[in-house]
Image 1 (tube, rainbow, N blue to C red):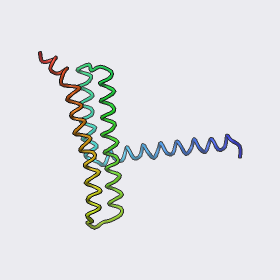
Image 2: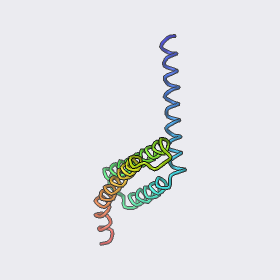
Image 3: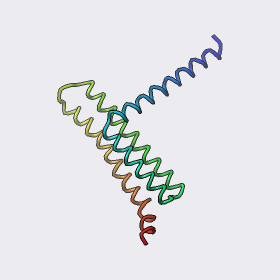
Image 4: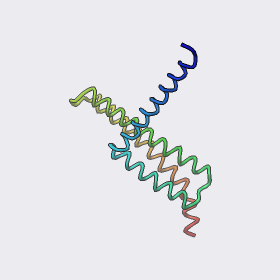
Length: 129
């Protein structure tokens, strides 16, 4: 086997990994109400940013915050699924794991709102004057 054969298999593996990741994104978007809510809020926030013509740095910050919310929501969903797979009966540690994962999303969302206020309040106040 020469280098080119190994490289082709590596590319196929990489493409398969991307396909699995996209399936995960598709799954969380189609089955998780919280993710659907995050997507709607993100669309509204981005539309408002376009309307207010926010500077490039503000766009970068918004996109980072939105991506963080999406990623944390997906991790929360993964934790919930793994916990559900491990036990069907109530267990206090299972509840704690789910609550902590949900708390991570909640905490990040609170800070996302604060960042949104910092970025949007000045241009909104200027628009209202």
